[in-house]
Each structure stands twice: as structure tokens, then as C-alpha cells.
Length: 439
Image: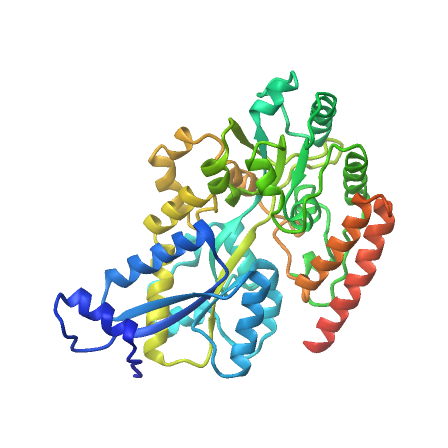
């Protein structure tokens, strides 16, 4: 067994022992993550709570940039033999991590090898399915999982002469509201975050149409993109018209629109359920959380949305004693108390049924209407091959292509069909490179 004597470990052991000396050093566990701001603070609280709960291990959490930067840092560190024990990877990096042969220790193997209690069925099916093999074996641990919803500025609707309780379940109804908001002088009737994730990836799943062939990549790497179908083209066309008329205001590729909604400038905002923490903290207006709208003319819609966020991957190349600590920490993060608190403070989904039931029993959903919509939206129907998620290689780069093409639509430089056809063609080239590299 290898013990790493670190200053952090000695300090933790000393404090817990209540003396000025320590008889042993705690084993250090390195966790690299992508969180800053309030999410970073809440993550740090989880780490502090775990470190204080026992004296065998000390987790050291390190911020490594945004999701893309954190993934790249982890890959570079592995090549240099300096990888952390745990790496937070966004959901679209799943295929990349699965293909990194020898770089990871699957969670199910970690738990078997360390003898720690583990029940994969305790996790919400809609969440765990993204990170499991076709045999249901968990590869990485779901940590922060969210799904897109519609945030509504009730005050803005009232100012436009609209009933703030109006039905907004369909995009047709949202379009009617956008007309009234624009006529009333709104400078930002609608904005969005994460345009590819919300308006193509989740749009496709919610309407039960393929984003890509081969069950969106789950059934093989020889997949091809398919998000240039009639449903996707119609939706992007409508948004393009709204952009032309000043009803949809594009703010950026990530979450730049969030500040404009939280300030009260925008009436509608499509964003992650995890945006709840920021909206609740900053909004000085009455707001609602509604389900993501769907197009009423599409048969079978709404189906279910898919998750975003990230999971925790265990990196290979460490000692047995360290892996025992990693397993204990992952079980701690999955506990009902930790997950219920995380869910209630952030808007991320509770990753286990126990955390959901605990939150419901506490009265949180009654006191905070709309905070259960994301869970209902994801779990109301059993996922199909089109709606269980995406598993595509080089998908971070493909998203960049999608962003470029959508920006051309919003600017009026391309029609929706031309832009989506181009994104599919360019993206397929990256899929073929990934397939060739992983044969």
C-alpha cells in the first residue's frame, strides 16, 4: 500500500485528531474539475465535508478551466504520467474517454476491486444510461446532470398584457407570446444558452427524431449525423425568422444570455435546469420554470429530454490504497444527503432515486414550484434510441461547427437547411477520423 505524505494530509489528520501531532498521513486523492463561482463553492463544501468525515483520505480539488480545458488537461497529464485520480468530464466527452484505452478505470471495476458497496440501479435510469455500457455497466459516475428548461420572466409577460400563467408548452404558443412582447417594446423577448445542446441535441430527443444514426452513436462508432431532418430544419428556420424580427436575441455560444435574463432584460430564456441557482440568487422579478416547449405537429412529441453536465472518470495508474479512497469518496458524493443538497442548491438533477424522494418528502418542490420539472421532463417516458443521449467522437469540435453554422442563420447569411446540411457534412468528417483512430 502506498501512502502519500502531504502537508494537506498532515494538517487534516492533525485537526481531526485534536492534537498538535499526527501519527499517520492521510492518503491524498486528486480531483480535477471545471467549476467556478457558486458551483465551485458548493463543490468545495462537499470536499471539506468528506475530509472532515474520516481521517484515512484527503481529497484535494483543483480547478482546471472550463469543460474543454479540463478534459484536455487530463489527457495531457495522463500522457505525462501525472494524471489525477478523478477527472470531471462533460457529457459530450464520454466517447473520447471510452476510447482512451488504458487511461481509465471503469467505476464498476473500481467498486468490485475495492469491495465497496455499489448499486447501479440506485441511480436514475435517464442519468446513468448516458454513462453505462450496453450491458448496463457504469463507466463513470454521474455527478452534475441537468436538462434544458424554459425560464419565464412573469413581470415581462404582464407588462406585455399577457397572462403570466399562459400555456407555453408548445413553440407555437411561445411564438405568439414573442409577437406580443416585441410589439410591447421588449428588446429581448427570447435568448438562449448552449444553442446546440438545447436547440438541436435536446430538440431532436424531445421530438424522438435522430440526431445521428446508430442510436446517436450508442450502437457503434460508424455513425453519421442526422440533425438536418425536417423537424430540426423547421425549428431552426423559425428561430432564424425570430432572430431577423428581433424576437430572438443571440448572446453567445455558452451561457452569455444568462446575465441578460437575470437582469430582467429578456422575457424567455432556454437554459440548463442548473441555471436555477443563479436566477434565484440574482433575479429581482417574479419568474417561473417551465418545461422545454415542443412543436405540436410532431407525432409523439414531447418524448424526453437528455442530460447535460458532467461525470467523474477514474484515471488509471494509481495505487490500491488510493483507489479505495476514490471509491469511498464517490459513494459519499452519491449519498442521499449530499445529492439532495446539491440538487436543491444548484438545479442539477438528483442522480439517485433516494435523493429525489428525500427532496420530495422535505417539501422542497412545493416551496419552490418548477424545480421538479426537469426530473419529470426526463423521466416521464422511457427513453428511445433517439432520446437516451449522444455518444459521438470528437463531439466538442462538432459542436463548434454547429455553433458556426447556427450563427450564420441568426445573422441571416444562410437558411436553416443550408446551414444544417453543412454542419452535418463537416461533422461527419470528424466522426470518420474518430472511427479510423479507434478501430
